[in-house]
Each structure stands twice: as structure tokens, then as C-alpha cells.
Picture 1: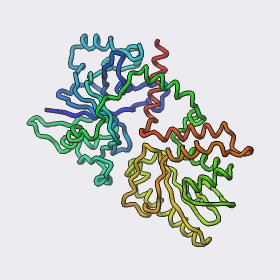
Picture 2: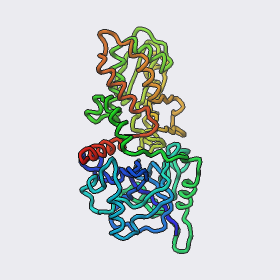
Picture 3: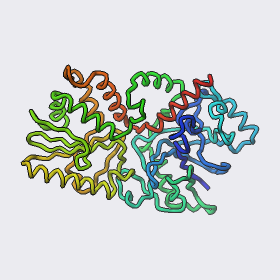
Picture 4: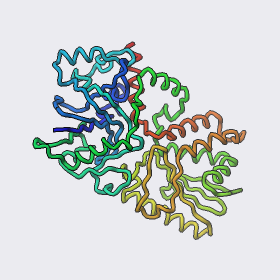
Length: 405
């Protein structure tokens, strides 16, 4: 009776409690002995035999999860006697600190369920869903709605898909098995690192501190839209270069950049053009957060288009439409009304533009201090992976290690 476990990462209070460190953070690092171990989230006793693979996932919506990593070739520790697994766990350390010191508030003393021989990350984003709206999506893998899949991203911290007692394989199990065995989907090498290596990177990265980190708004769309408006409105040269290099519009003289005009993030108007820009920091592909592929968003696209076209017609101007998107987002606008009118611009292109044009800041314009913080905030969204939850846990993990050394 083979089984596949989907174990939720980033659960419980860890995203709201500054002192709560989820046990599953160890899943993403090698221990000091160079081995990978994983903790399977979930309440109650763990007693699932014949597990071949574990997929580490994180919730995206109530019906969709993103696959973070695949753990294969598992050696169960939980099946040993209490004395044996306590002895094994007493020898496992991260950054020189043992598990009991790292997780002193653990309700269960079983911190590690499996030793893992092979831990790999996806080559590209993988989403699992039982949302009927995403059934034909090119980005999501659809699992037929069953009692088990219906718990996929609800309150369940782990989901088990497997054969029944007669060896019959369910459709969802077969789909997951095909995904796991498809070598084109996964990195060939184990790229997890020891926490000591990550601490060095974190300390170096922490030097590039910006004010959005201070107020915990690095992933706030409104904050970034406000910064775009502020930077461009306060520097005519920067604005003209932005219009030409990023938006493909040659403009001189009058140029107005406003926020939330008819709910549009950035509404830009010069002598000849009206420009609509939607800035979607937390938008996920195919409406995973019901921003890009839901009926509501479809109505928004159409609404913005109708409004801008009416304004342009009254003023005899041309229109252009854009969506600013972090590199970790894969936007699917297929089938959406007026989607073809919108051009997607990734944050790495925006970051590169503002970095290259830092020297054009006017003497009486935006201060260097604010501009450097702005660049640092933009760079966060040039990464391929969405690291918001990961960085929250990593920071707590590092603090816990340093406190107990």
C-alpha cells in the first residue's frame, strides 16, 4: 500500500507570532552531519507506513498549494522505539544547536520523522489544485475532487494519497506519482545547504536593509505603487527615461502620475497618451489568489480598459496597458477579457532600469537615502522564488540558533 504525503509548510502561528518557530524549517536545510531530515506537520500520532515520497507544499488558496520540494528514499525514524528515536534525535544539530533547544515548546518530542536520501526542488513553479476553474490551466496540476484532495489547502497539515488495501491506485495518487517520477520537473542535484552557510548569506543580505523591511511591508502592493509614483513624480528626467525605456513612450513636457484613479494602481497621462499600470506583487497565476484569473479580476481588467478608452477618446489620446509583476509570479491571462491589451513587465527589468538611472537624480529631487531603499525593495521581487514565508522562518531560525550557542 504505497503512499505519498503532502506536508504543509508555514503553518500554525509562525506567520503571526514573532516567537513561534515551525519545526518544519529543518526540512529545507542539511543538518550539521550533512544529512537531510524532515518533520511532517500534523496533529496527533504519526503512523503512516509505506510512504515512498513526501512533497513539501505551501498553501496558496483554499484549493491550491505550491510544491516547494520533493523528499525521496526515506528512512523512517518514527517507526523505531521511543528510546531509539530519542537517541537519534539527540545527535542531530543545526548550527551546533540540538533539536530540543531549537524547539523548546514542542508538544511532541518527535522532531524528525524521516532521514531523506534525496531532497530536490522543482525546476519551475508547480501548483496542485482541485479548483475546477484551474482544470485547464497550463501552470496547475489538477487533482480530481475527492475526500482527500478536498483537504488539500484547508486546515489539514498533511494529506495522504495512496493505494487501497487491494492495491488499487486512485486517480489523484497516479497523477502525483507521475509528477514525482517526471525527471524533467525536478532539479538533478540536492541544493539544500547547511544552516551555517545560509547564516553567512543572511548576515550579508541584512546589510542591505530598507525601510519596508522595518515596517514589514516588503510584499505590500500599495507601498510599492506609492514608491513608483513618488520617485517618478519627483524627477522629470527619470520619468521621461522610464516612459521611453520601460513603456516605449517618448514624452516631453507634461506628464501626470496619479494613484488609484478609478481603482487603477498607476494612471499616467502625458500630452498624447493615457497609460494604465496594474502592480501585482501578491497576484498569483491563474487566479490562485483570485486576483488574476477570477471573475472579479476579469471585471477589473475590463473596467480599467473601458475607463481609459473613454478618457482617451474625449482627449484624443492613445492608450497603453501594463502589469508589473515580480519574477516569482507566473501570470496566466489566458481567456481574460482585454488581456491581450496588457503587457507584462517583470520586476528585474524595473530594478535594472532604476539601478542604471540612479545617477540622473536631480539635486532637488528624491534623496539618495530614499532611492537606495527603493532599489533594495525592488530587488526583493527580482528573485525566482517567493521567499516571504521562508525568510520569516529563516530569521527566527537564525535567532534561535544564535541564542542557544
